[in-house]
Image (cartoon, rainbow, N blue to C red; front, top):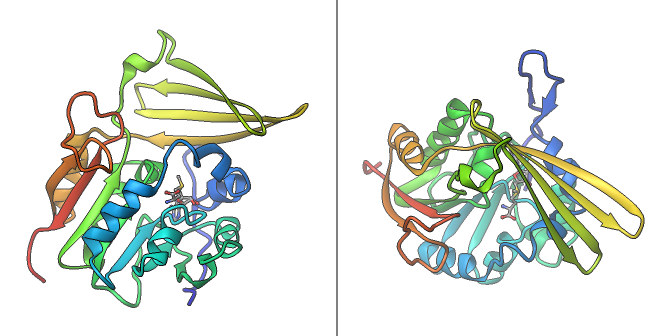
Length: 263
Ligand SMILES: C[S@@+](CC[C@H](N)C(=O)[O-])C[C@H]1O[C@@H](n2cnc3c(N)ncnc32)[C@H](O)[C@@H]1O
């Protein structure tokens, strides 16, 4: 099953036009190298499968290469995904189990799918912050709420902004080694615009390739406000996918929202 394709274009004044598929098209071939080890899916898959229940329906916002969706599908959860990028969808389809998962190629910022009534929706690894500001993030949450059944749940995994991680000029550089070579992550925090610009530099032998993403962050309180406007209320906030309650030290909390009014 595939919904009609959209080629959704955004333009910020003075900036080149940007398609919502740009990130995925650029990152599809290296996504699992960048994130595979950092966000191990097992506890997320267990938490989401438990919430969806046996034979439950789950919608993943920004399904990507299927890091979560494929193991969820393997556990019998009926997963559908939203994904803007053709390259990401092709990557998903190339993996065992990924070819069976329905993907709707629409913009997360607002969508209308044919079959609503999902038990669970999930927006993982700060994908919500890829949307360029409050209006589109809130609109995404509202669209998600419309697609959940009564007492359905929306899980948002999103980093908690922490300016102390950056130097006085707002910069941070991390270097990692992986089986292919070196992975350097350069981040710049723009406190005025509340964005973080991240460039991953991946070396593979003498070749270095760069991959860029801008994240428009929100605090947990702001997420809760957007959720309330979308008709969702906070049920729990976890430190991580283990379900332990979030605290001051939670860098990537998981917020669990439920529909407010019976539908
Ligand atoms: C950070 S990746 C997360 C992938 C996957 N959920 C995971 O946990 O590994 C974000 C995904 O969302 C997709 N995406 C970003 N913005 C989008 C938008 N506005 N509409 C639809 N998909 C979008 C990207 O192409 C990418 O595949």
